Image (cartoon, rainbow, N blue to C red; front, side):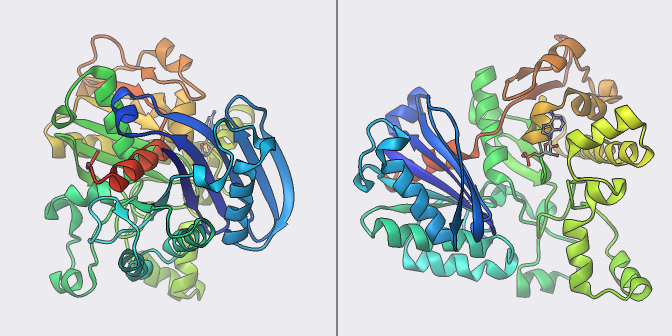
Length: 415
Ligand code: AMP
């Protein structure tokens, strides 16, 4: 089956076209046919398109909403110019898989999209006001453009974490708040953590239930996950993606009393403070320079910038703290897995996070570590490390495509 994977953000649409099927999944022989991104979907859009084996195409074109962006992608996919093999008309797109950020407590697995499922995703909008509306726009647009004959599947960022026990997901606030409003920790980046668990089990040749690892997704958004016996036991993002690790523009864990204090001292509204915690904090907030780790590393190295160094140190220290906490919570782990733009590409950050973890049996092999960048996969710990470390480039789109096939063919699987 040819699966169109859509990831609609508030101002962007990312896509991949992946050829896969049940037997293809078993053989690990899925094929990425094309991919790309449309940024600034409202206005002068920046369009990047890439068919496998062809050069990347970059175009600027006025578009006015998510629907026109998806229409643009579909027309490109079936056009002769894209040169995608075996795709000649919309009938060659057999199903669509959508990334949906929040599935609330209802969705523990991916779901075939019906009117009822759309209503349930709408119910979760109040939990993810920044993300779910854009995901829904993508679903509605794809339904309109491809018609009711093409099945659509929602794959939720939260589903993988639905195995977390109450001890991980409940906040220690009055229990009625959970009962009345479902205020609890949900966790995000679930498809990425799930992919890492899947790929790790393949790399070391073990069964799903034998996977005991700590996964670190370190990109612009960052989260950690404790995966015990193949299931999410705990994760660092919470009610929203704000909790946990230090991220590009989000500060992660902090004392909620700060909100009232800032409100009084700075005369800011709660909404303004929330925006500040989401958009002006983290690496950007501490450094006062940028949310981009590459730029911060350059500032630190070339200009000895104190606050760039401080931002990086706080980022690494927080990640280290979570590794320690999860090892205790899991009663030991086999490996730490790095992914995301920072986790995949920065040997120095991986080394700084793991520094001092010899006490837990982890020693980084500097030579191996330095060699793994730009999409490479492999082990970065020494042969005699009791706790191993790996880099595995994430591939959420692949799991979305696979879940789409399994859901459409009614052979669902958790991962
Ligand atoms: P993502 O959200 O996964 O695309 O990750 C974005 C983050 O990865 C940004 O902070 C980038 O600066 C960072 N990043 C990408 N390449 C590198 C690199 N070579 N070294 C350090 N950070 C990097």
